[in-house]
Length: 220
Image 1 (cartoon, one colour):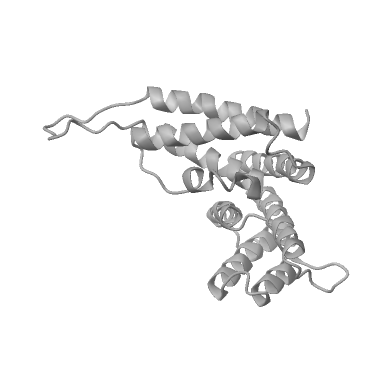
Image 2 (cartoon, rainbow, N blue to C red; image 1 turned 30 degrees about the vertical axis):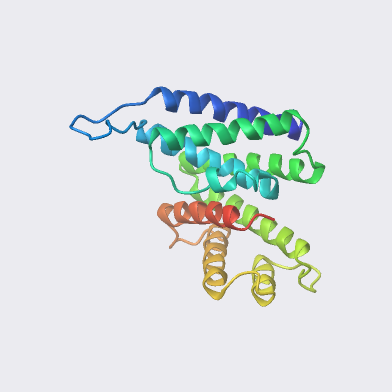
């Protein structure tokens, strides 16, 4: 399957999931001046929204028009579900019209999707060290792309994750707090690669979540 079709099918699955979320609507009992608010199932909503954030990471800068809706925090209210669904349909229409197709971005989106899903699967099966190694590779590749796009690629034959992180900090692309956070995420990945006995499953879970949050914040 081509990278373009992979993205299109993922968006279509998200829209189908959105239909299920909207169908789970419920209203609380009580007296409300303007009528009761309408909510959707919290667990379904959160799972769906987390996958929407993955889509934003996959698309990088191509998702910028919809990022404020798809990547922001939102309560499980019907209006949030409908606005998310509307944004997804907007992405689908733009894909169908060929407006979001850039070869490099689509190829990287496919690779990122495959690696992220593989990391999540390995983690769910108990192979958290392997999951940590893959997640570290995802983070390093995104930092490398950021360095290329912002003209600060380290002047070394084989730069490391730490080199990319330092270069972006010196370029003032992000602040010291972010620099230290990325460094900490990379350290967990290094521990996973070296099978550090002190590393536990919770450390890797925090790393996976932290890397996803970083990718959302800094699209290449």
